Length: 440
Image 1 (spheres, helix red, strand yellow):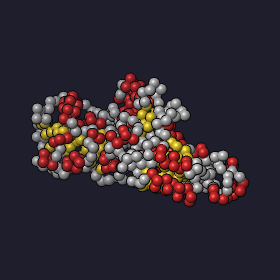
Image 2 (cartoon, one colour; image 1 turned 180 degrees about the vertical axis):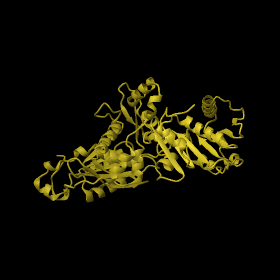
Image 3 (cartoon, helix red, strand yellow; image 1 turned 45 degrees about the vertical axis):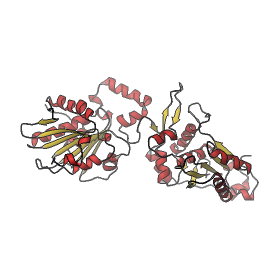
Image 4 (cartoon, helix red, strand yellow; image 1 turned 120 degrees about the horizontal axis):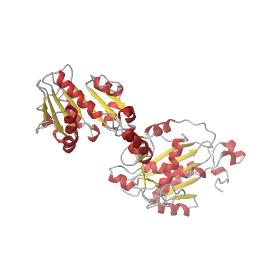
């Protein structure tokens, strides 16, 4: 029977490179393409030794082997091997069998890793590539098929790498195979776009940006471009200092300074961090920064240790705006004040109104901010809390929190048209030279 392959399927099937990959959405025939490629190789080149890998034994047995038997109307032996009349052999192995001690006895001609995203690192891939030394055919191949799974090891090796003589990457989304899929299935996918956007983006659109059971607040492009923005400077409309005060020994206190440079545009002009300092030292640091930078408003995370800082600075008659992330938001669409704050910040990113400093740690934290819908009866958006992130082994996003708190209060900064003429000409707010109070 002659098969009519889609273009992306044909690209993967015909690839002769050493490490081809098909990373595609659900319903694109990934598994079938990998099995067909190995089956065809074994038939064409006698005495081929092939291997098919799946991380979990149960998935290998109940899914991969069952698919193989159904596609090719054959039976795999109890030893998890299929033998051809020409002497070729296909072995089925699970992740715990992919170790140097097990693999040292094999010299492979072709190998496929199914659902490669299930492997957390490229360790198994590296073990296998050492064994690709067969001579049955004119070339050897270690291929993989997978779903997109963020910026994992597959993305680094195949997607984010320049063209290579060894690596070959084919990408596809579910709709590239729409005419071969049931209409009811396609209709359900379109509902999924609004009902489960994270799942839809990752498993249907083959997006590398959306992960897990929650949605990512910002994407890589937004965060990267924000640090590269350039704005025309029309003078300072005011500055905000936001401070995320450390609560735990492993956390850092973060000082973030934002300056408004036009009616719409905000620039992060400074970020500083420290650890293991007393509350009085933190208060002293804020006072020192205020003397040199003259802040319109100082935003302090008022929960936990930050409450003591807020009280002390108020005693010194500074204009303090406490931020309590768990408090009630002004917009009922959000679960709490912290969630509302991050979506206010997201709007600035969406409109390219915010320029951040070029700090890899800050960028990583921003990309790690996720949200989900709470089952409160109102479908409120809720940012994943710090404690939940810690359970996932992720760092507390202190730098991202400090940036968010400052963005919440950018409306406190005056428009230049509201300033006295002498201050407009001056081009910045020198509080030491004027008694003008922008929050008066």
